[in-house]
Amino acid sequence: MKIKQHLLFFALLFLSPSLLYSQQPEWALNQAEYFQQKSLLTQNFVYEPGIKTVMLYPRLSGTPKDILQAPVVPVYQSDRLVLEFDEFGDDADYYRAKILHCNHDWSISNQQAIEYLTEYNEFSLDDFAFSINAKVPYVHFRFQLPKVKLSGNYLLVIYREGDESDLIITRRFMVFEEQVSVSGSVQEGLGNEGFRRKQKVDILVNYKDFQLINPKENIKLTIRQNYRWDNAIYNLPPLYVKEFQKQLDFQYFNDENTFDGGNEFRVFDFRSFTNTGINIQKVDQIGNANRVYLHEDKSLEGRVYNQRQHMEEFNGAYYIDHYESRDGARESDYAEVHFNLALPNPLENEVYIFGGFSDWQLRKEYQMLYNDEKAAYEGKILLKQGVYNYFYTIYNPSTQQKNDLLIEGNHSQTRNEYDVLVYYRPLQAKGDRLIGYLRIKTP
Image 1: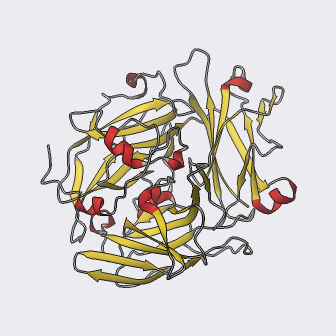
Image 2 (image 1 turned 30 degrees about the vertical axis):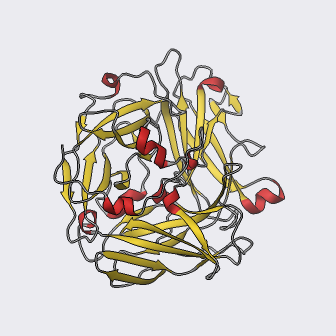
C-alpha cells in the first residue's frame, strides 16, 4: 500500500549496475545484486535504490550535528536513538521495523525478543513528511527506536509492511553496560615506518568489581577508527590477564592493535545554493536540477602532513542542514555534486569517492572515470544539502583489495577518534554482552 503514487526516477537516474563478489569485506559490498535477492545482511545496508540519506544516531541536542555521534548508548540510556531516511518521489510505501540481537561478530544471537524488548518486536514507521519546495521530491521518514533491556550488538531491520523478507534498510547499533573500566591511549606505531605512518591503540580493562570467567577466551575487543566498520579490528583477545590486579592488557607489540593514520578528510559545504561554502566552485540551478561543482582536488600522497584546520572536519562523517530554513530534514534539496581529481595519468585500478555518506562501502554510483582531455578523474553523486567529509580510495578488482592511502597519504599525526567495545560471553549465555565502552582521540 502506498502513501501516494510512487516515483523512483530521480534515484534510478544516478544508479549504475555492478558486479557482486562472494564473501567480500564490508566495504566491497555491492548493492545491485541485493536489490534483487534482498538477502539479510547484518551490516549497514540499503536494499532499494529509491532510499537515500539513511542516518541512525542518538538524539542529544536536537541539532543537525547530532548525527555526528555514533549509535552507541548505555543500556540505561536517557537519550533515544533515531533513524531518519528519505524515499525519492512524491509518495512512499508503509514500512515496519524490528530489532535483532547480535553477537560480537555480528552473527544473530539466540536471544529472544521478549528478553531484550518490553513490547512486541514489530514497529510502524508512522512519522513521515513530504519535502517542501524541493526540485527532487522525497518523503522523509523518522523513527525513534524503543529502549532495549540487554547490552550487546543490535541490528535494526526496516522492511515493507506485510512482508518481512522485503528488506529496505539494515542498521547496526550498540548498547553497553559499564561493568568494567576501560582506559587507553593512542600513540605512534612501532619502528621507523610505524612512527611516521601508524597509530597504535593500547587498551587496559579493569574488572575489579565484576567477575569474569576465563577472560582469555570469553573476552573479545573491537576497535574502530572514526566509527568505521570497513577497517575495524575485530576479535582481539587480551594479551595478558593480570589476575592479581584484576586487569586485562591489550598492549600488543606486532601491530595487532595498529591502524594506518591516514590523512585529514576533505570537506565540502553546500548548505546554501546562493552562497558558496567550503570547497564549492559554483552552483548551477537549471530547470528541475541542482548541480554543485567542487574545486579541483589533487593527490596528497608524498606531501608533508598538513593539519587543514577546517571547523567542519569531523573524521569522515556528514550532517544535513539548510541555511535558508529551520527544517533541514524536509526543506533541504538534493543536488548532483561533481567531483574532480587531477591526476596526470589514469591509474591501473578503480577510483571511488568514499566516506560516511557511502556507509564506508564501495558502490558503482561513487566510482570515478578518467577524462583524458582534462587529465582528471570525474564523478558525480546525488546528495542532500549539508556538510560532507570525504576522501578518494583505490580498488583493485583482481586482488579485491582497497587502498585508502595511495591518493590521500598516510601520517601518524592525523587527528582520528577511536572507540573500543569490550564483549563478554558468560558460560551458557545466549549471546554476547557489551560490558565496556571507551571513546578516545589522538593527542
